[in-house]
Image (cartoon, rainbow, N blue to C red; front, top):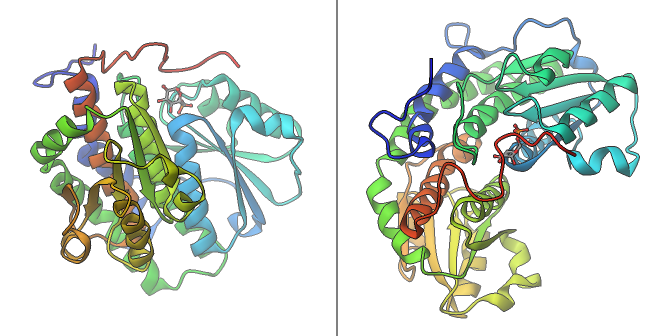
Amino acid sequence: AAVEKGEYRHFMQKEIFEQPTVVAQTLQSYVRPLEEQVALPDMDFDLAGVKRVSIVACGTSYYVGMIGKYWIEQFARVPVEVDVASEYRYRDPVMEEGQLALFISQSGETADTLAAMRHCAEAGLTTAGIINVPTSTMAREADLLMSTHAGPEIGVASTKAFTCQLAVMAAFATNLARAKGRLPADEERDIVKHLQEVPQFMTEALDRDGKIEAVAQFVSKARDVLYLGRGPDYPMALEGALKLKEISYIHAEGYASGEMKHGPIALIDETVPLIVMAPSGPLFEKTVSNMQEAQARGAQVVLISDDEGIAEAGDDVVEYIRMPKVHPLIAPLVYAIPVQLLAYHVAVAKGTDVDQPRNLAKSVTVE
Ligand code: G6P
């Protein structure tokens, strides 16, 4: 059956609002609430033997890989490298015994990612895939398939597939950590609890739609926009900037908060909105001090944070978007929503073709 927009104006909007449902659907395959465990689909593979993970993907899926690196290294203490697929094969990467090659793709057909998967398989590595389209080439060819259950994604700019990929990545990192003897049962119980809270928190984030639409009116007048984040919110800053470029055609860059002083701060003046993602927590103070350096130079800050963060740093910002207070592990899943909605409403304000942005394809099957 054809997928319909229903009450929504665009597929992208519909897909953003579907996220609590499809992320819950995806988590159902990975979280066992009764056993208080996170599980992967049955697979004939010894996770404990994994010595290194190389993650390869393109576009938005690549940012899931970057976030995965933070999680896998933190929880499982296994070293991770992340590459964009078009670079991986050509840099003659080191491949070794015990290395798991993990590919992330919504379509399962992206030519560069598929070619990298085949390259690794030929070299004798075990390949794993976090894939949304179950009938795709990558889903068939991966040795270990970890499916996302986002359903068909029609909007060219990925939204719901991204958060479902993050949910599976969190499950993968947790399983690897357990297999490596790095995850005490009480910590796993906490992770299960936090993952189960994600759909509810996403719904709360979606409730900010009206506020985000108002912020979008201001952002839509900009020529350049910067996004800042630290830790797993750094890839989220990259994703925020990519979403904005893709559908509104406004030039945007994402930076690790601490890198701003090494270049991009030179761009700051009163015409440049600075979108800062800073959930309260261990990284908050440092990010805020980077934000204040920019404010001192006239930056128009939009702060995305929770009650605590806004109380502490929200005084001089132009706008803030209030998020629920969430555990740092699940923050990227929840903070994805305001950056998606912001890009969406900016694009609508500019009158672009939201679902079919110029020059872009849903699935890129050329290298
Ligand atoms: C295209 C799409 C992006 C997507 C990327 C990777 O560029 O427009 O939204 O992130 O391909 O696609 P994949 O299907 O491999 O995740």
